Image 1 (spheres, one colour):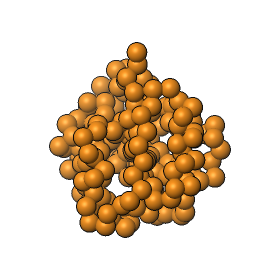
Image 2: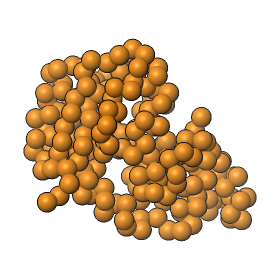
Image 3: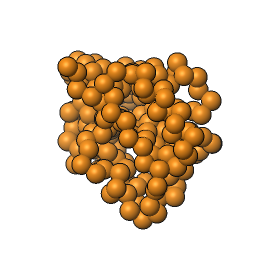
Image 4: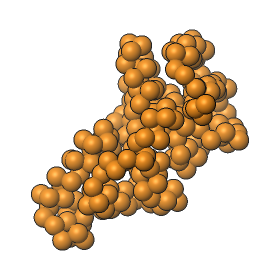
Length: 201
C-alpha cells in the first residue's frame, strides 16, 4: 500500500477550500487538511505534528502573518510550497514558491500540478540523477547566494558556462527562482535544511 501524501491548505475562504478539496479527492493516497483560522502572530499551529509533503498557501495569509512569511521555508522545509493566487501579487512573493495555482486555472491544470508533487512522484524525482555533478555544484553555490561571476571564478569556468549551467538547472527542474531551487535541493537531500536559506536572507 502506498504511503499517503500529506497536503495542507492554508486558505481563509471556505468556498476556495471546498473547491481545492474536491479536486484533491480525485487523487489516490492523499491526506488533506485545511487551516482556515489564521492567527495574526503565531504560525506554529500550521505544523502540528504532521510532516507535510505539499503546502498550498494563499499569499494573502503571508501578508497578514509576518511570522509565517519570515519562517515559511524553515517551518515547511521538507514540503513542496504551492501558491494559491486569488489576486495579483508582487514577483518577489511568488518566487518563494515552487509552483503557482491561479483561481481561474481549470481542473486538469490544477490536478497535473498536484500529481507532479505527490509522494510517489516526488520520491522518483528525489532518487533520480536529474542534475549532473557540475550542475549540482552550481546549484549549491546559487543557493548560498553566489553571483554568476563568483560561481565562474570558484569553479574555474567562464561566465557564459556558469550561466548555461544556471539555465540548464532551471529547465531540468522546471524552476525559475533560487528560493524554489533551495526548496528542491532540501527535498532532494542535496543540501542540509539548516543551510538552505543562508544565501537568501
